Length: 401
Picture (spheres, one colour):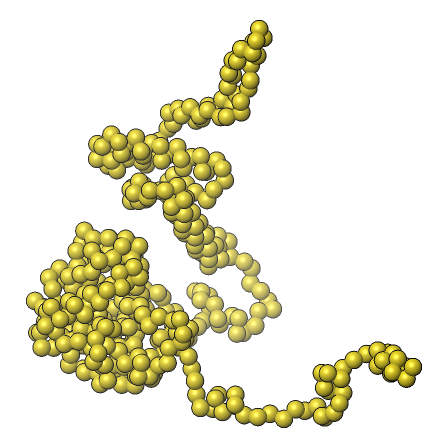
């Protein structure tokens, strides 16, 4: 791939003698290399010559990193979206970090696939082992097989999925509605959009596993945005007609009565002391690590909606240096528990313990309570009398002299 000339001669005439000096500066000549399999240059570059040239250099750069022993995934794992992401990254360090991230993800998938295959071989071996004569009755009845009798019914993952989806279908018919505003895509960076998609996935999962789930509505969605593209990758069956989730491109103002809408924003003054089961609460689908402006507050004021914030300061004491921001799935879990129990103290258990300082009267009293010393007080326990005995003898002999 590369032809390296490590020596270049320079001729210098010193007097009547012709001498040569050799320098060790390497000179690199780039030659053509074969493209990785599955790399569609036309689809990635769209006919742009400069971008095509940059892509070829990028292929050579990845080959060099792989030869140097860096963590680089195989060419078969790199997809069209990965190549486009690599073309956008400006520096070499950012490309190396992204390639290392893809390498770890690929190895994680390979290990998961390998473990799944091992479990399959353990579950369905090609040749059944001979019957163990020393097998106990408990071991015999605990096996699922045609030759064994077991009164316990096997519960498959598909059965649990059907149960959870049935709960969501019932919630879509009779449950309380919860709206997630997905209209902040332009106010977040690409990394924040991907993080927001992960939080929305966790929000849907925790809502589905709850005993009394919400009827979820994702409003103001844009299918061409980074948020929805990342969400489609995490939830493959998102747009299936049977999937129990409501997706709306229009605003929530067009779907629900305005007098029932309550926008939950941490920047307002009014606290949500009493939970209203008839209200439709709105959660702003935004991850504001970079842009910390009160966007949800401004949007709620602009649309003339009622606003409220969770009573975090009323029931919690925050630690020094810890932020008060919560993820979307944590907010949804708090609302699920307070809807079911009506107890804010129980619902706020979803706030991470690292953010909260737990002070109780018992701990304070135990801390300030005086405890007597178990050792008997005497001159031997004093620090200023702890001296070697020989030193005291020397000092005494000097004073006597």
